[in-house]
Length: 175
Image 1 (tube, rainbow, N blue to C red):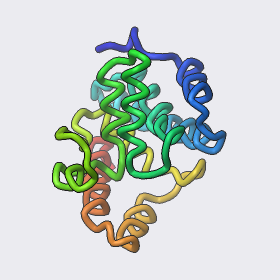
Image 2: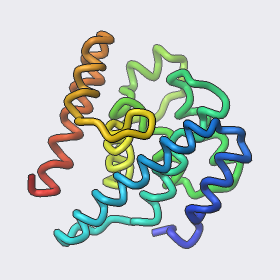
Image 3: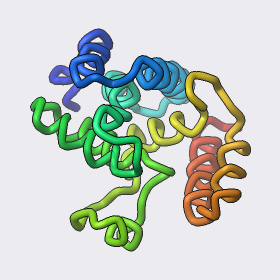
Image 4: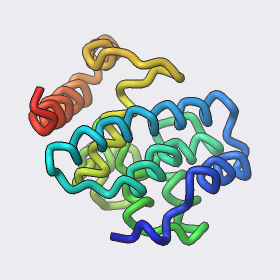
């Protein structure tokens, strides 16, 4: 684990400010971190090993790229900023892979992204991606609302990925 190289909560928020993330984005990221840490604590109580510091930093910085764009490319832009700041690759991957429950290789190619993995792989990546779907701006919302919103936008594959992510987290939590 690389937790000792991760930014603290204060450093992460300062990085968002330094990159001119709007206050609404910072508030959203703080709310996502709150939910993500709640999930981590529940998993740890069940004996599941999770890097709490990595999840916290990832949740706080997942929308770092919104300082450059509000498009789907914000994950890629955020990863570039995180890399340029010398942040650990584990944190960069969370930022890069949090969007819509993940972006398939086919979708990434259509967006013109370089070849890579853009779906959450590690438990920490999945927790941040999932927690992001539970927060609308700064308010907690039922996951069904996010899934339905994606379907209404004809993003059925993304809706299905979010549903599967929800089921996976739910099983781990024992719900």
